Image 1 (cartoon, rainbow, N blue to C red):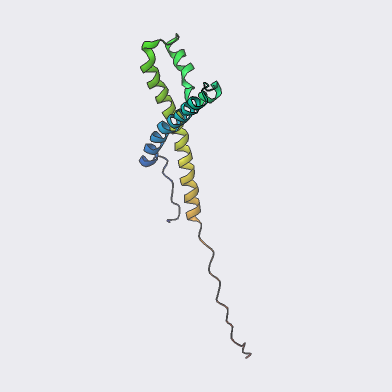
Image 2 (cartoon, rainbow, N blue to C red; image 1 turned 90 degrees about the vertical axis):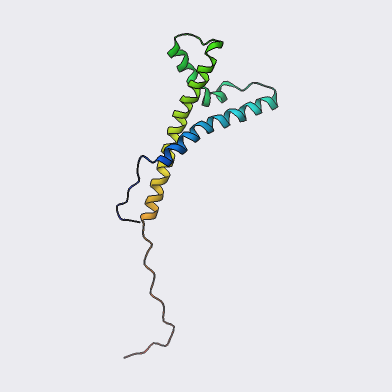
Length: 125
């Protein structure tokens, strides 16, 4: 590794992975929550829905009214985009931290190897 090597803050691979994970993390959580709700026969408590339903109050605030049935498609798209932005940014920061730790670990040189021991008789001169 070169001395003084840097971690690029913007990486295309990291950005794409963050966008994909920003979509998949809340989606997989919502699916697991839905399956658990179906198995138990009870609706999920509000605190379990908040990790992916947090943009709903923001959407209501931006619309200035309670959403209706005709606003369902736009609301789902808004929720998905907000979740992608939030969880994608969190994923990006985690991936950036991991790459910085790996760079620091790779930059440390191992200690020098010790001299071999001579097991023969010592000669006095």
